[in-house]
Image (tube, rainbow over all chains, first blue to last red; front, side):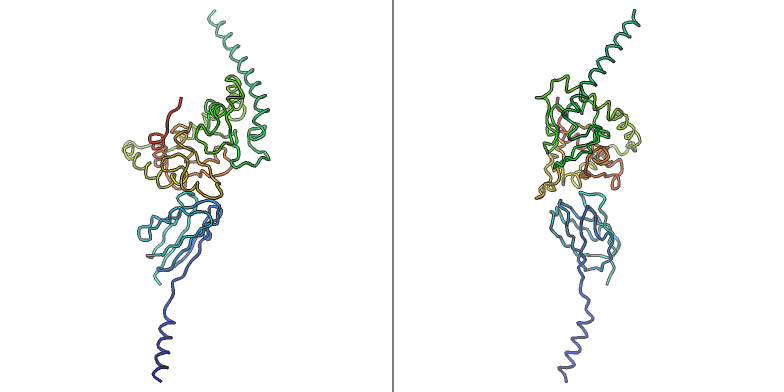
Length: 106
Length: 227
């Protein structure tokens, strides 16, 4: 009986845990696809480069600041969202690439 | 007597110009139209790694066109050999004539257009002049160096892709002056006749102060004057 209770308690705990999600953003034709995403703090964003040239994804947002460096054609880079708020992600090589990220606490 | 001399001089000049245009047209139609098309628009069926530019909206003035035709684009900073040198094929007069024909026929207002666009830009406030060097350096490193390279040789990290799909200019050799570099950065290559927008227009992201700072930085830091 005790064991059953333990298992039930553990199941309850596990079911209340929310796992971080991974969001995939493609870079194709010098555009972020999609160009707007909503995420939760702790989620990850994977930037795929489907173009046949390089990109450099970054944000100047103070709390979520990142710069993946040069991203060659066909490669991917993943970052973790650190803080809530709205911020813009850009490419340092292609100024018309803009991704709007809205991050909320879970 | 004085008036007669001036009229004679004018007549000789016009005649020479007319003759140069005829010669220039002959050379252009023999040599240039396969890439640049008969009307200078570059609308042809050729498929090259770097596509030819439209001569109708080029940023270059007649003297700069002459220099490109004479020495070829690589001499002036291109990292491809698509536009070759013609100095071993044509003599000085022929080179001048074809540059004159191109300028007069396709883009007679090139200089005026450049000046107009520049005059429409935001002037630099006196209290911001001192900040230009720092701003230009920061933005060059942040954005331009990916393609043009840290030392502006056209060999930035983004050029090292397996497709070799971009050919940024070596800015140490560029023919463009500071004003033209600013406009090229502001409006992008396509606005001035390139087939692709590999050199994008940065006006969405940066104001005129920033882009003028970058142009100033490039000229001051990298551009080597050639005779």
